[in-house]
Each structure stands twice: as C-alpha cells, then as structure tokens.
Image 1: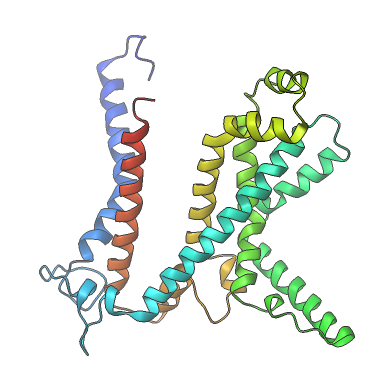
Image 2 (image 1 turned 90 degrees about the horizontal axis):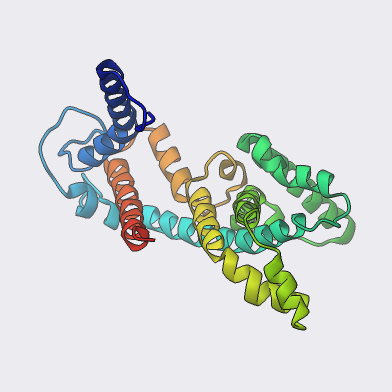
Length: 283
C-alpha cells in the first residue's frame, strides 16, 4: 500500500484482512504450543485439561519436567556450545571471505564465489550425507594406510560443528558482503596515505564499519546452528543437540515436555528480540 496515493475503502479493508491473516498464520502455532506447555494432560495436544507447571518442574514417576530431565538439559548445553563455536568460526572465516571477494584483483574470483555459495544451493540433507561419506572415507584411508585414527572424522560432536560451519560461514559472508557494498573505499585510501599498513587499515577502519553486520552475522550463524536438524542428523554421534533430541522423542510419542521446552526457547528468543528492539529503536 502506498499511503501517499488515494485508495478505495475495499482495498484498505482487504489489505488489513490480509495483514491480520498473515500474522495469525505466523504467530498462532507459537501461541498454541506455548499454551499447551501448561496443559494438565499427558498428551502433547488438545483438549485442555487445566493449568499446571508439572512439565517444567515435576520430578515424579508419572511426570518429568524440563528442569528435571537431565538428558534434555544436556542436549541444550550441547546445542549452546555447538552454536557458539560454529558462530565464532563462521564469523571469522565468513568475514575474511567477504573482504577477499571484494578485492578487484582476485584470481578465480567467479569460480571460488560459486563454490562458496554452493552450501546454500544444496539441500541440507545432501550436504550432511556428503560430509558424512567424505569424512568416513578419509578416516578409513588414514587408518588403513597410516594407522592414524582421527575420531572427529566419525559421526561426533566435532563433525557436527564441521557440517554446520560449512553453510553458516556462507551466510556470514553474504551478510558482511552486503554491508561492504556501502563501504566508502576512500576511507581506506586515506588511511593508507597516512602510512597505515594494510592490516592496520582493516583493523582500525574497515572492521569498525562492519561491526553491526559482523554482530548480526554472528547471531544468525548461532541461530542457524542451534535450530539445524537436516544436516546435523547425519553427523551426530552420542551427544544429540536439542533439535535431534526433540525429533527422536516425538517420533515415538512423548509428553507435553516438548511443548514446555519449545515455550522456553520461544520465550528466550522473544526477550532478546525485544531487548534489541528497544536498544536500537531510536537509532
């Protein structure tokens, strides 16, 4: 809708109905799962049986809440640790890649850029299978020829980090590159003319300009890692992340503890979003 142009009453009503339906479609599943987290029922769906906090704090033979389920707590810690490592590695490598691809005199730039964005084109399932088969073959070759057993080449915690890093770094590269498109190169030229080295110019001029994009890219990479399942499911070892743990539970039926953990995740993300909104509202 262009507010500066006159619009008919029917158009305005239709526009408002569309916006309402659109946001209801986005929000209603989150509201439903949050409400059912407090449902006094042993099933994860309706009907409503009354209000209870058992699925958060109970520790009995009949009901085990989120904070009493040690396996669930462990999977949350694993997801947080994995997300932080993946985000840190992806931010460093993705930022370096963005700076590299902005160089005009960079050989094989087109081919290498295509390879860099390939993880976004490939389905996550294909990426996970490819990394699994490649690492397994490499591990067997090293063990048979050289007698070296590299544990991280088998399905494990570190292989999950490698698999998630493969696509998260690409997102970081694209986000930082978008910020670089608006970068005034005369700032670098001014620093270089004042006898600053190339590294000093990047550290004191370029990176401070890219700081908002780098922080945003770190958050995006963390969230991608925390919620990923289609790549992780092929690479996981004995330490499941929270999406894998929830998926394995719901396959064989589970209690509303799944609703409870989902509610907590939605709550934490909403709090961070609100804090970010109020901090940067004026800016």
